[in-house]
Image 1 (cartoon, one colour):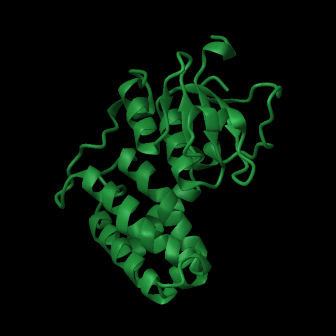
Image 2 (spheres, rainbow, N blue to C red):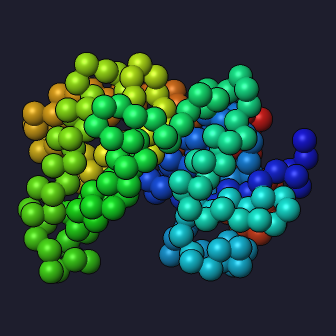
Length: 224
């Protein structure tokens, strides 16, 4: 395998969308060329591939582009090696309270909107941070109920749903960690703490310098 026939992943270490894409790529056993982006100075090559200018962006060797994190997750699952961790992952599992995709959609929609207003109150002057936090808390409480009696969202194994949602729960918790850990969300706190202490998390959170054209390729994933 040469670098020229690897997909290129434009990523930003702390972005929860990019985090979940990296989780899926790693679990599926893929290797990509990782290009770390500074969002205030986006590279021209990324903008040419995906003019919307957000990460993650996965550019295939044939020039096709995946520019949504859930599409990258689905591609990772569809092409996962038979012996990979992600070989049994799915976004279509059910856990008694609706399909996993519906829960991810709630996370990406109302919960993410509440999270943004809570984390960045200056950007959302028409929404009170306390109200946004309360709205986000209702989703966290739902997750806490789902996790009662199970290690992960769909049972005893980490899955696509955990990968898709945990980075956003982590971001919500980090706005005010003292407050978050003082809440009665024992199952979510256990779930989040186990994730942050896991090898799968540390493996996707290495620090990289900003990518510049001409830099030596940086590999991420199974063959890194």
